Length: 352
Image 1 (spheres, rainbow, N blue to C red):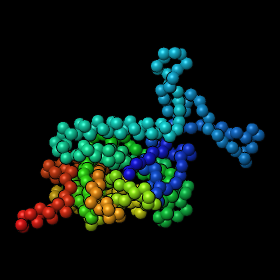
Image 2: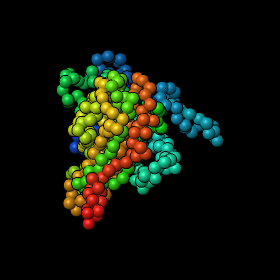
Image 3: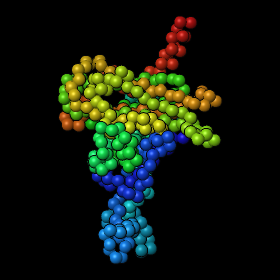
Image 4: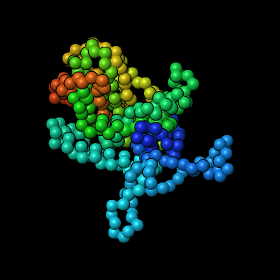
């Protein structure tokens, strides 16, 4: 059980009121992502044009605004007719298209060095992590924050904000490939209840001691077995944590936009850490990310939970050779995760 949902937004990341504003199960973040659905026009159904009593209803027209969509024509056999539409179906179609393009990208990675380490059998969970990894706060975050937040110092505004925008609008440029100032690492696999896997990210030396804007983006997705008879039907809970808070101590980056409790209630944990404070680190410095799993149902405790982890480190204001330095720094082990349980098993065998 690990579906994710989309809602519609304008191209600037604004949210249409056709969306349902609510939290997910156990106050999880829903929707996870926003995709463009087209601009919707409305008309006032109050024929008296009383500005104190406005009754709005959507208008449906093949004319702009909206998204240009293929449609049947009035002339038989005509196959190049288009109309303008708006709605959640558009957002779903665009999300599906992005997932199809990501599938092709993963196919290309299979023939790349170390591409065989991505488990093809659980490609679906990797696709889920990748498209959610592209979500980022848009201008709508600040606009809605000013509207719904009376006191910016209170953490409650983050929870209320998530009902409208989830993790944010998907940025296509972050989904396909890497620029020189950006490094994205992928990993997929299985984890059991009680296990902890460790992911290591080498820090680029060129970023040391520089006061430049940087982002560390971490997305963990998984599929959970379900028990339909239980109210809390999702049995597996996974989460990541950054060892020793090194994202703050080393990169000076912290989470600005998402509620720390809500991001751990669904089947996607997505965090964007921003920072600009100069941090000092050496060429062999690492940020380590632990992945944990817990299954509440003892009958399912031996289940292998498919997961995918996507991590991006980038700079926005200045070109720094992050991709090249991260690749060199980890010396051919770009996306290796060390399982503490497997390490312990190897130790037992060597001692025996």
